[in-house]
Image (tube, helix red, strand yellow):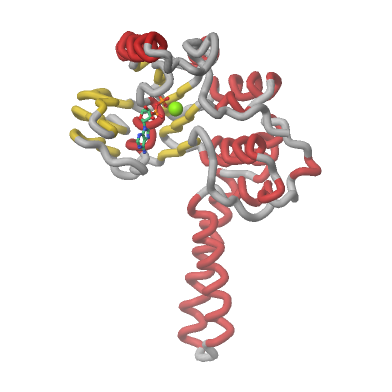
Length: 273
Ligand SMILES: Nc1ncnc2c1ncn2[C@@H]1O[C@H](COP(=O)(O)OP(=O)(O)O)[C@@H](O)[C@H]1O
Ligand SMILES: [Mg+2]
């Protein structure tokens, strides 16, 4: 059964068609590369899949129970807590279980009657069991291994997330996603924030990744190695070039030579230190 079905999806911004009647399905274990020039709607497509953005027409069906993990192109959220804890807690049920455990423990202290106590103790045992299960599936050493692979040092594990620069925050967010191991990973230019050793590490990691993936990446070789099929928005390229040529001929090119070189993200920052 497909994880995600995209049906006749169309999106426009201020009267300009960005995506027009896009159709595709994502099957379990699928590896899809999204290609197209800047502004062709790659990021918008991922945002629609995770529900951040509503399409103008068409629909996206996510099969019930399918987990998605999205690495945005840029992170603006304030990420709190320590680095390693952030990664460990990125498994959604972990925080819930912690909260349930705390609530049950405090109820136990507040209810002296034996019947309630035994009921609460039973519930507590169940939550405890689930926590152990979770620890087996998501061991701490895996979180550490991923962080080290992405270039962090053991002494960073306790660092507050707020003290990390933008590039390192992205790496931390990526670490959280890889650790969660969702059914479908949506990665928007993940290598932008990585240095060469980390890119190599991630390649190896993704190669053994069992889940499905939709990847946007300007490094065409990386993309080709990681994806088994591509969805291309290249057809829009002519239109984009035409528009740029028109702007240039009208003297609005204004961005100097090479303004048409593709592959640069506007505003992309250098490697975070
Ligand atoms: N929230 C928005 N409001 C208006 N225009 C937008 C918005 N988000 C994206 N766009 C425009 O839609 C086009 C596609 O953007 P995007 O999906 O980011 O493309 P890509 O990721 O392929 O570079 C761009 O021209 C962009 O300026
Ligand atoms: Mg984009």
